[in-house]
Image 1 (tube, helix red, strand yellow):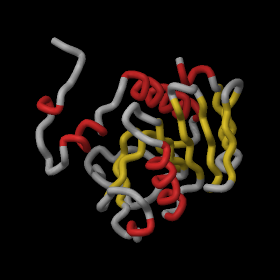
Image 2 (cartoon, one colour):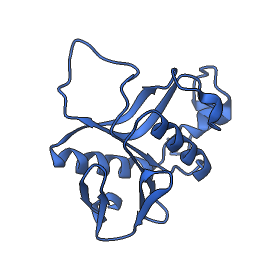
Image 3 (tube, one colour):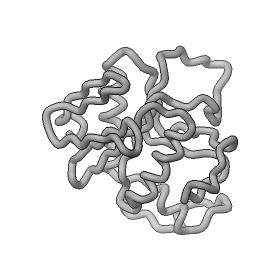
Length: 171
């Protein structure tokens, strides 16, 4: 079986073929997402979620240059520590996370991600991280005008008082 997927490999869900292909992850994206989830989980302070749908239906989406209707999926996000309720699942979170992490995928542009960050901050997210696999950088945003890019040693989020070792993110 080929490792390459074509548009014909996807069921139609009302999205255009291009939108369906944009949602396909990559090996590097997936590995970094798993690494970050593991590192965040080891902190023991937060509940960690990947690919969680956030309900953004109450936001005025017209002020953001995004093709979003009512939900937005975040690559990795953190909430205050909470137990999982096995009998009551949630399809779209109304409560916003403390941290939203976006990992650039091969078909995604930085403009789209910065628009997502603007929306996240408008909805009350405390910090956003931009992870770029091909340059191995992590940029931590406290707001859209206050950010710092990390390329080695340690990633520091002063807002949430998080310190993560840099190298394991990209291993």
